[in-house]
Image (cartoon, rainbow over the protein chains, first blue to last red):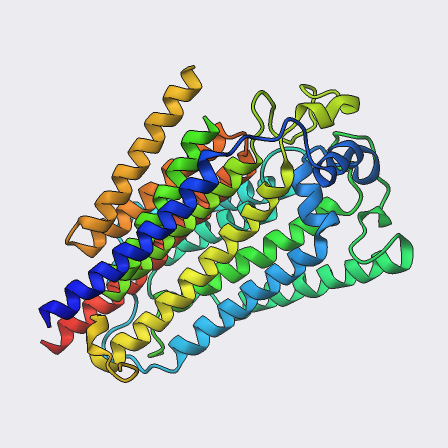
Length: 238
Length: 118
Length: 84
């Protein structure tokens, strides 16, 4: 038994040493480019005129590579569904609901009631301003989900509705795809943001459909994160 | 500066893999995976960094006509943004399966699961 | 120069937190330390001029992931307590 474990350790260390040598050869000769490569230079020069967004990362995620983002949101949806499926099949033993946290006190409950609207508002602010400042749908969605997390901690017994979450999730997903198809009909292609006027560069109602699309992504991601958190937290003894 | 971040990222990948390969508790293996995940993100973002340039946001600090000379590469950042979100999904999946395994054997020790051993 | 020192300091703190996450005996401490690694990594992203990535890592990597771990840890701890 002991010899096998040492053998395993030797194998692990050898593997890591080889990987370390590979990383060393990659990193030691590394010099950064003096200027941007062609793709990045194209994005830097044409984002303002083609997309109208100040944040180049947002322009890439929502419009230039919009289809990839649709795929990513779909992967996240599948993850949430699989987590719910895997945990839903296990029957929890009696008398064990919630995650074992103590019943929350007055302080947490009251604090949640005061903070939750502000947190939700901040999440909405982050994803609506995604084309102007750092932030966007994914960060805003995570903030929305953290508000839901606070609710979950404050009132462990309360079911705040699979139904609302799944409604929000599927509605925003459908609208997202619908806007994408509208882009084929009215503008240059799937998920083109120029179905709405580009507006004045730098104002909140600019960059065509990007604020709309990013708000939908934010709602969808927030609903998916909330459903993952909820299904990991609660056991199905109700 | 980017070299420091890149070296730290590479080290973090190695440490995370070491943890995932040597720990016997399944939850600790998952912790190792998340460490390696953060390391990959650091390396990717460090590759996109160009010295003396600023963040890819075209506000008043960056004149529009010389944006290509002033901002760093935005593509790795978009890539890593995606990777972080998917990373949370992967972690959630691993945790759900770890819980299922715990329910079958009442143990988190990987050595208890002998069905696929040879 | 100041940026270099700050980056090195945060990178060292991150690596120390990673060592704690790997070597500690208590799983809860390991989870907290992994969250700390993500938090330091998000500061490094800020130094690398990637504010979008820094926000995402801070909100998702160090916030939500830690809570996922604690939910599962709480379930497992309670159920193994019921059996004994």
